[in-house]
Length: 57
Image (cartoon, rainbow, N blue to C red; front, side, top):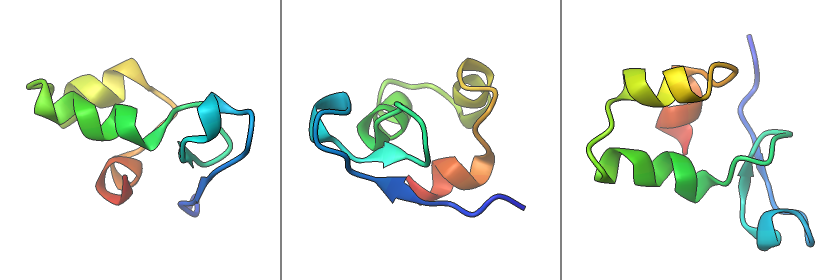
């Protein structure tokens, strides 16, 4: 089981909050559904992410 966390690091992704130890900003995962993408499409685009990451974003 992977623990969910987000982090903000100055100089990394412009200081935006990122998912875990990645360079995937939270706003990216939040923005995909607004553009009409389903969870399946998002998880296909980011195969190392889980459905829990999407819920917590």
